Length: 244
Ligand SMILES: Nc1nc2c(ncn2[C@@H]2O[C@H](COP(=O)(O)OP(=O)(O)OP(=O)(O)O)[C@@H](O)[C@H]2O)c(=O)[nH]1
Ligand SMILES: [Mg+2]
Image 1 (spheres, protein in one colour):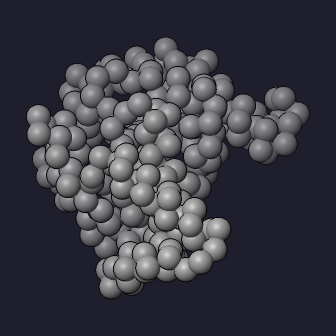
Image 2 (cartoon, protein in one colour):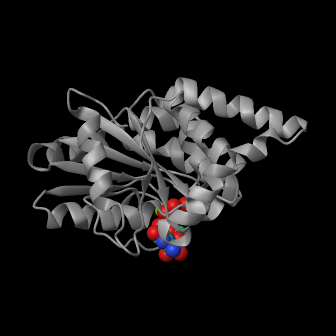
């Protein structure tokens, strides 16, 4: 059994991928459990085995504490820890008969990774765990965008201390050719200027520190990359651990 946390910037396609990837795994004959930790989501495309909204929603939090939406989002992640036992109970039950548990995380990435309570929530889940970090294709316009988001993925890996698989989500919005073209524009980094120098340095750090992982492109619309994603999750836990 593997816990798969779906993490990424707001709107990067976490909830949609939770449903599509889960369905893909089920079609391959695996059994899948679904957990929703996002108290702000209105509608879910999948039927969760655990849904934090059965305990509270962000609207409830705003009303109860008389606070604005942004503070309520922070409070709603802190409140997850009050339901630690409930989450643990369901996760343990699911781990008995599921091959995978997919965990859909709150929209705002920073709530999960900046706040220590977010990290504690991830630790509620026992056993093998990995994170799928989504870099949405619509945020990728230049090599600098890519360098920045890869660096963020690396910082998150450092922060959560768990294998992290970096994936380009919404791949249908960025053709392979355009993406390759963006990568080829590494030469742009040589253009004089502080930003360019910095980007080059950052890129070197990424190359040096990041365990090499082939780039996976996934689309929940076309189904592209779902098989690759499954393969790489398997590779994370196989003895070779080679993700190149
Ligand atoms: N083109 C395209 N759009 C997608 C894909 N996946 C999701 N979307 C769209 O992106 C928007 C956000 O998708 P969600 O799955 O709600 O993203 P999220 O990361 O869960 O969003 P938050 O939880 O609010 O941060 C929706 O309009 C989706 O229809 C994809 O693979 N391709
Ligand atoms: Mg979502």
